[in-house]
Every structure is written in C-alpha cells, then in structure tokens.
Length: 314
Image (cartoon, rainbow, N blue to C red):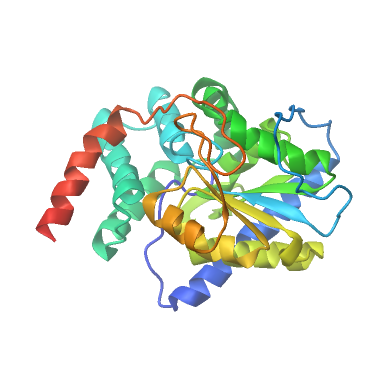
C-alpha cells in the first residue's frame, strides 16, 4: 500500500513537489489501467434514474475524475485501511488512536500545520516501511470487503456509471495510497486511480513518498498530466469532490460538481453556478438527490470538539 501518511518535506518548492506527485500518480494510474484492460472485465453497476443529460455519449476526449473520501465513499479510505491493519496486528492500539487522530484532524480541521503534518507523515509511513507491496495489496483486497464496500455512496456511484455507460474513462483522484485507490476503482468497475505514490525498492516500501501526498494542487497536477497523456480535452471533462481543497482540480474541467460539499466548497460552487449533489441527508441539491445514511462515525464526532477548541485558541 503506497503511503499511509505524509513524507518529511523536501528542499523543493511546494509547486515542484505537487508536480512531481501529480506526474507520479498519473504514471502509476496509467500502468494499473493498462494492466486492468488486459485482465478480466470489471464489475458492472447500474445507473440511477434522474441522471442529467451530461455526459455526452461517445465523446472519447472526455473523462471523469472523482475524489474518494466523502465523495465516493463515506469517511476516509486511509482510516478504514488503518483499522484493517490494526486488526491484523500491524501496530498497537496506542498507534491506532494516534493515527486516527491525525487523519481526523487533517480532514476536519483543514489545518496543515507543518509540525503536525511532519509528525503524521513520519508515524504513518513507518507502519508500512519494510513491508512488501504485494503483501499490502493482498491485505487491501480483504480490507475493502470488510470496511469499505458498504460505504460507497449509491448516488455518486450512479454518476460514475453514467460516464462509463457513455463510453468514457472514470478515474479516482485521492490522497489515499495509490494501491488502495486502485483496489477500490477496480471493485467499482472504474478505469483506474490516481493516488499518493510511495517509494519502493525491489517491491519493498522504503518509508518515503514520491513527491508529496496527492492533495490539493497536487491533484490538479495529476489530472493535468493524465489528461495530456490520454489526449483528453479538459473542457469536456468532469470532476467531482466534496472538499474546498479540491477547487484546483474542479476548476480545471468544464463540468465541475460539488458532491456532499463542505461549507467553503458549497459557497464557491454556488457563486460559480457549479452543479451540487448532496447524498448525506436525502435532500435534493440541483437535479439529483438519493437518500443515504449519514454515517459520520464516532471518531469524527469526538474529534469535532477538539477541532473547535483549537480554532477558539487560535
């Protein structure tokens, strides 16, 4: 499994690290996609009623890019993966608590404090350092069935299927490790995944990342690199996300969608007349809304108070 967290910052500008992370993710995604095309057909899904007329059938220069956490899946894939590793005794309960806190803080607070981020990178990467890529991939398949399969939003899944039915490629774009993202994409019948790439030597993880986590601007760079390699016209492509951190990616395409949006993204989307979809409460946003259980989880609830306290103190 690629990187479970973050790499210690390098002496390279943030932009350069984002470009490197994006290019590495695009290369990994294309390789996995080509391998998938040579294997058995992917699992099929069914589209829901009421989908918009877009996407255009037969437009092979268009594609769709979906964020993963809270867009396609309820919660954070990396946390579910961490639960699975803990169950298999990869680390102790104290480490699980620390790991869960770091992931929840980053997700809910949106605070990229350098000291906190470095600590999260170091502790998370140490979990997989020395393990074989094949081992983590095999475990990832089991963890998907145990913790992730039942957390896919039906509404978002239907949107992805609409693009597939139109003959377009559909990619996940996530800060989660590329191996985990690739497993999820394959299980959903999608084309492939762009994710955080961890360095490995002779099939063994070194505990370092290639570039930086695929987050924020790095996601946009990954989409840009993949579009160039695939001959896509971004003006004809679509992107879907729940987070304001993905505004750079959403702004790249001609058809941006805010899915289960946070407050900042909702405001941004409304100001620019982007389409909205909210599957958390069953209410309709724009044209489509499919009821779904709003499973936030005990961890998120417990962390929210701490996040609020941090904001009051700062």
